[in-house]
Image 1 (cartoon, helix red, strand yellow):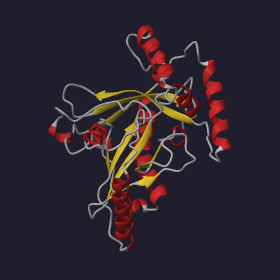
Image 2 (tube, helix red, strand yellow):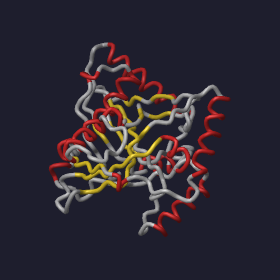
Image 3 (tube, helix red, strand yellow):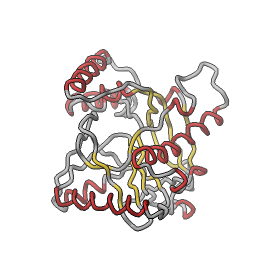
Length: 287
């Protein structure tokens, strides 16, 4: 099972023939569970965009809902993490410095959100504004490349819809302003809400894909793995505190939620018991 923490989302609109294969894989995987066969190990992957490149090369139709950015790969990594970065080798920096920077056009976020709420209501869908982790940066802790540092702040789903999901021209304008105003940081004004996406591999070598609802905010009706968001509230975080507890204690809670959310999303969306899933690992392979 491979899971992606995503900064921004790209979805493949899979051709009909491929969709049939995916449906068959789901059936085989769930059938194997009914036979009480345990699922294979769970792993975690950050997106590299290679899947979209391969799909395009094979002539599959693709629909890039947002830019799909390579964040980190295991190229040149220490041998101790080539098989996957365990939670013990992930460091978390959670601080207000990693929050989204305000922009002069921020009043438009509320207007965009209200339009999206109206669209969702008209189509029978639902949108909820909740606090989310914001991904500022991910990289190696040092030159040994045997541990990963994830820098996180806070954002909201409303900010995500009102920045990352803007039409391309408007989003690029935000990125240009961020690069100009904040030392080349094109994402300074973007929400970059952190999500998790799963490529669920079963012990009998099947891949589980789920079809997205027609009532979600993006990628309606397309196929992907179990997905969702690590939730700040699950780590006991509702806002940045003026007198926060020890940084290490907060980082430990956030890291536990990053990895725990992967298991929870798989369990909730497939009904596979938590004890049938292996421990998550980060896998960022250069494909």
